[in-house]
Structures are given as structure tokens and as C-alpha cells.
Image (cartoon, rainbow, N blue to C red; front, side, top):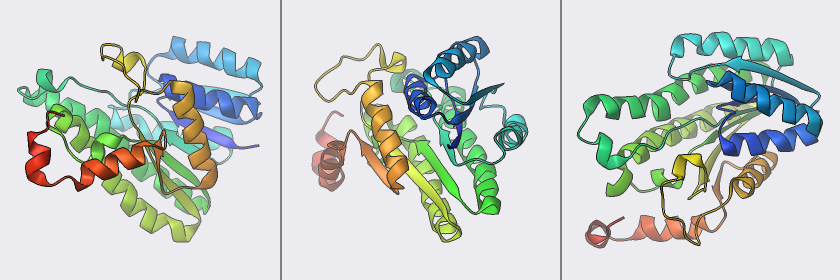
Length: 245
């Protein structure tokens, strides 16, 4: 039996991940802004076999509550084996690039709040001397593109922070996993045209669980994004700048 903390548990992918742990009979501590939605998810998870499901309302942009909620999760679960940070927004580049406040808000949610939570979680896991700290990032951080450079840069900051945490925590018995999904068909991407590269949330959730079980330092989900991003990373600058991506 594992003790699992999921931050941003109302996202579709996070809910699919929670279902996996519930079916194993694990204990879950879920946070999110929408408490009624969390309660609905919790009811489903209990039916699926979760040994325990505890909920906490948390707006991740309110950093003043991060320590309180993480502390309560540790006390309730009596320690934590897996912590998954799953929250995020996907702002429309064209709508926010001319708006300083909107840009900073995107960084607050996608970078600063995550780094705040990671700092607190890392210290807890370090004291514990075990566990897995996993974060849903994005392939968008591998090479910054004109079409989503604000979102990609925020994720790049998180990935860099995770790399530092990995170097710090691995000698202490703590695994740090950077999860890099590609295109996922969720409510957050409802307005996007879909194609063959798009994955379903259940597929991505399965990849997340496998990456955590393996203790991977990073994982592209689905796996073929490794090859796609390898090509994009190695494109010469002049060619890359001509691409409308």
C-alpha cells in the first residue's frame, strides 16, 4: 500500500492517475480548487477501492497555504510515498503576450507555484529519506517555440529546478521524475484541432504511473515524443526560425 499526494487532482490526467492508485487500494490525499469536483472524484475513487481518500481545497497561486496543506497531507497519510504535482494552465499565446499581468499570472501558476510546492515537498522527502516526487511538465520546454513561448519558458524553469532537485535528492534515496506529455485531448485543449499525435488522458496517465514505478528521471509520454523532440532540438537555428510552430 502506498500513500499518494496529488496536487491539482481535478485535472483529467490526474484523475486517471488517482484511479490507478485507488484500484491498488492505496491511500490518497487530493488537492484542488474545486471542492465539489474533488468530492465527486473521491466518491468514485472509494468505489474503485481506495483505502482512504482525503481532500483539501487549495488554490496553488496562494503560496501562503502551501506549507499548511503539505503538512496536513503528511500528518494524514503518516508520511508520503508519491507526490504528484499535476496543476497547470495553457494560456493562449496571442492573448497574453501583449499583457504583462497575464504573462506574470501564467508564470505564477505554471512555474512559481510549482517551485514553491517543490521546495516544501523536497524538504519533507529529504527528512523522510525516501519517496518519489513527480511533476507533469511538457515537451514544450525542450525547445522554446514562437507559438507558446510563455508557457514553454515557464515549464523550462520548472524542468531546470527539477534537475537541481534530482542531483540533491537522489543520494538521499528520493526519486525526482520529470513527466513530459505531448498533445493531450483534455478540457484544457478543447479548442485545438486534433490530429494523430494527440493522446487520450488514460494513455498519458498510464505512462505517468509506469514512469513513477520505474523511477525514471524523465519520461516522454507517449514515448514517441522522444524522437520528435530530438529532431526539433537538433534543428539548426535558421531552419527552426523559419518554421511556424
